[in-house]
Length: 111
Image (cartoon, rainbow, N blue to C red):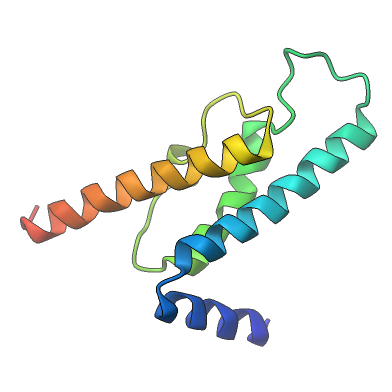
C-alpha cells in the first residue's frame, strides 16, 4: 500500500500521470477481458467483453492519480461497455481529459 502511494506521488510529480493511467487501465481491463474469455468462451458478439459495470471499478484508479480532479466514474465509461481493451482505455482517458479541461476552465473563470 505504501509503495503504491509513493508510486502515485512520483507519477503525478513527473507529469506522466496519463501514461501511468494508461498502464494501470490497460492492465486492469486486460485482466477483466481474460477472465471473461475464460469464464464465458461462447460469449455472443452482442455481449460486451468489458461490461460497463465492471469497467467502472477499474476506473477508480484515476482518482489516485488525479486527486484534485473529482469525476464520477460513470461519466468516464461508455454505457454498455467495450469489446476491446485498447478502445476502452483510449475512450476513458479521452473523456477524463475532456472533463478535466472543462473543470479547469470553469475554475479559472470562477464558476
